[in-house]
Every structure is written in structure tokens, then in C-alpha cells.
Length: 84
Image (cartoon, rainbow, N blue to C red; front, side):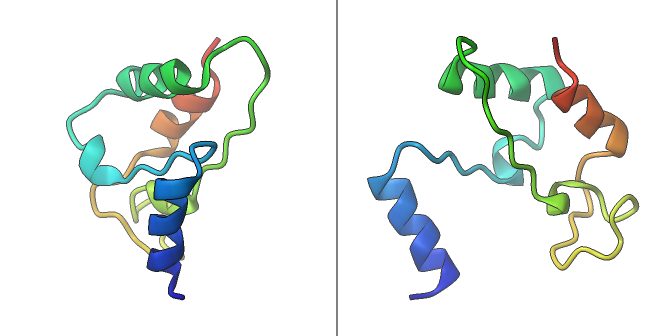
């Protein structure tokens, strides 16, 4: 089974995971993305947030194996994580 097959299987069978890629957010603000996440997971209990370094623009993470030419800046990532 390839990694893509595994991701597709999880998307279909396990709603405890949420996958998203750049195509969903190319025109969205950091605040809009954060609201979408919080709407999905809720705010009543603490949560664990996993962020792949590939979300960052290649200028901020040049060593990543999956560079994003229009990825986030480090400032945008910090704004996402540091929300009150």
C-alpha cells in the first residue's frame, strides 16, 4: 500500500484525522483557516496540532522534501499556533 493509498483509506474510514492541502487554502486568511480548524475540532478540550514543515514557503524551509512556492511564512505559522 502506498502512502497515498493509506491517506485515502484514513480519509474514508477514520474521522479522527483531518487532512488538508494548500489547494483548500490558497486564498484563505490565517484567521479563516484557524476558524475552520476550531469549528471542526471544538474548543472544549485541549488538542494536539501537528504541522508538517512543508506548509512553509521554500524561503523559510529550504531543506524540506516537499517545497511549497506559495507556502506560509513563519509569521503566518506563529499567528496560527499562538491564537488565544
